[in-house]
Image (tube, rainbow over all chains, first blue to last red; front, side):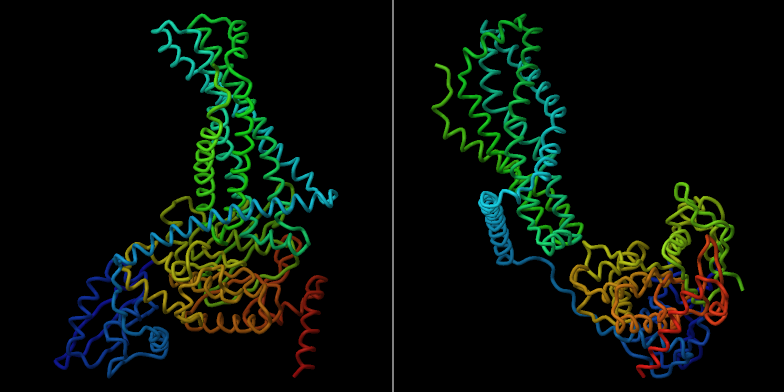
Length: 372
Length: 255
């Protein structure tokens, strides 16, 4: 594309300025700063502006000239109707407002801190609200069992449970191998080989299995739940459901919460088993411990209470993840940024809360399930 | 005069279905061409091929004298900066406010300073008859008519020579639709644009188009002024414009 170069020329002694060329986005590219300087110099004493040589003028050219003239037309302007029309269009530009200081003041920062604290508090209240709604929905279901969202529940059981089996087994097995291998190295030094079974049994069933599954499920299913509900919010699908008399809580939230309540303990049992199997394999290689001996000793040194604690943790973690995911999903604002932000927050908050709940469990069950 | 858009021998297939079989279309500078046709006749598909979002199975699409999918990324980008597209739903960036949406293409140029971008955005907002305070709203807070106006302002940000509109008045009430058509007409005159629009709305058609292209039977059935097209003896055209006559009759009855 051939573009006539825009130019500024001061002619005569009276300081009249002649402009020519294409004063457009294409014409001004790369020449704007130098042309601005020349315009400013030329405009110092200029009375008359001759724009008859200007071939084209767009919003950019017009606004640059308008700013040069101090937000008004010059006293004498030689220009045709089309050019004047462009100046009329840019005449909405008033004097530039003074630049606002963008450094935050100290009280402003303190207020910001407070707002974040209040924000976190209201998020927590929101999660409690989702829990309350789920409880109310359960009461409703007890009265009207025919409203039970069985298809949704089954779909969620499959998505959060069945399809998570391979990955949780793989991760559990590998963690079991690593844990067993590293522990065996230490135990060998003390000749305490047989305690590998105690370490793996209690550590995995009581602590590692549930937390591992919770992290995996929060990343896998929690994020998916938040994203799904969030997109449904953005596209007004939840509103559409509500107008059909289908409450979002009963049909979307409750099946997710119930599904995780059912699948999480099962996944915990599955993953813990895989991890112990991994540990058993590593022990066989590292300590020459036979599978038969390992399996014989395990129930004798690990009290059954540990398995129950593990399953109970699975229940609690599952509920936490589902509630947090649904809360953040339902609170997505209708834009893409909010969707990604809430999905991130959902996973991070779910894992953090799971660790907190785990600490509560550790204290509450400190007298249970210890060998001895 | 060289055509602004040249479509020749265009063939489009989706799976086994043929949408266009050897379609030709030329749009001259300064024209307002309306693409009309029944549902599934491939109007929007044709528009998407003109702007280079879809690659035709065969045939050539040239915009402003250059192939729209040249394979050279720099040439493609330079060409895309010379036309503006208004999508049916506006396609505003939902995470950015109105100001940022309009400023986005300007900032992409990477040589305009902040104050200039600000000036240009404010001028564009005024051009589409929105007020300065609307600049700070988010797309989700806008009414349907405002979304279209902001999308139009964004399409006009880079001073395009060619404007492509997909159903510009769909989803607007008759009042707003008429106002939006009037706005497009005024801007076209002021900025000297060539316009191609897809529309179902006969009022839009009658008010804007200098030429009408009727799509059907996988090709252009008729192409010419509204009078010329309406004079054609073809079942679809008769059906489509019989409504038009009815509508005019209604308009006469009302006034």
